[in-house]
Length: 186
Image (cartoon, rainbow, N blue to C red; front, side, top):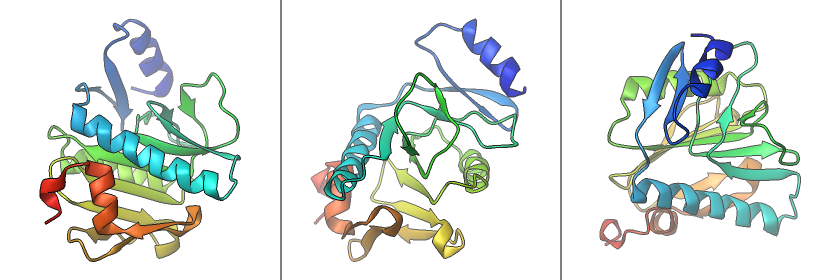
């Protein structure tokens, strides 16, 4: 499927269904579980607070929106958290974005995430991709500034940094905030 065909397909589906287009395939997304939503909303709040402290009113931290990558007509994903420039409009899909975050539900395959990451990295305005596991204390950061080489966090000693957004926090604190699950921090 191409974007136009996919958007027509969406109009025929019930509004409560969530779909995304990845490399031409319409993929139905399972409803997010509470932990998944909590991680997404906590990340949104962390980023929003960091931007507000800097007085960055030119950037919005959004959830539940899709993104488009220029020149790629068979890709309309819906990342969990997106940082977009500008003022919120009526769009469902952001044409420009600076960060995308995917919170991994149990149903996501590694190959699907790899496909999405490759396409997100191709967007000329994107600085960063985050992948956060909803089942364990693990996150991966892919940053343009580091030539997209992934940096993994799976212990509690590192620092979670997003220099493009002037954000830095000890990973141990970040994982508690993102997960809000104390059993991983001992």
